[in-house]
Length: 309
Image (tube, rainbow, N blue to C red; front, top):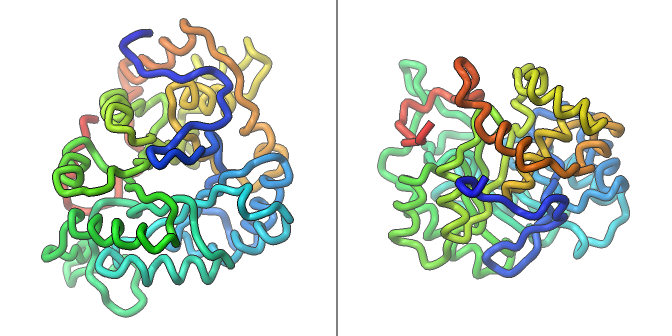
């Protein structure tokens, strides 16, 4: 076990490099359908969640804001994350202001460069501008280092209590850190037992960057929750397979952002279980089995993001 980073089982919060606590389990809102998001957020907060993860790109922040308001919990008790999309890399404050307006908030607790360290050209209201050949229209004259410089200035306004990144490999983090005055507080990445990202998690933690897992259950229709090892451990603990996967990530010191719109599942996902050292080791090494290692989220950016796996 010593070769893998770990955290105390059942821990409820981790600490960002700003000193602020961040709840270990948060509600993800990606792919939540219109008309479902507000109820899911309200249900999550009433079930005890204090961490909601959203993004301008998801197109549902107004509903997230409705759910926050309906839950009736004081703002200072909540941890809200949103993200700056690629078309806003040259103008992150404009992107954040739009998110804050939709959310009905004065600030967010964490603002990430979303969801990839790739700036896109600005062309009207297009979220993913395309070239004539169908490829994605990347802003080749802008760099993620320049984006980060603007993020640092935005942090100084107080409208984002902490700033971080998404889908950054070690190589991309090193690029940012070579110029940064502020170390990113978090790096949100695809992470589940079929893509454990051990090297990247270890690197982030060595730099004081909290790793966060999006699609921690393996994404919609993914094979993770049906894996025999995961279901065997779940049966042993009298738990759901999702609880096993979420608890595995949390015990590694990773913030976990499962998505659901079903109240019962939302509540169950937040109930961490304590996995044994042997169970953690088996889950940590599951991706080494033939055919298990898989990256489920791979947009066609046409850019080498330099991930280890």
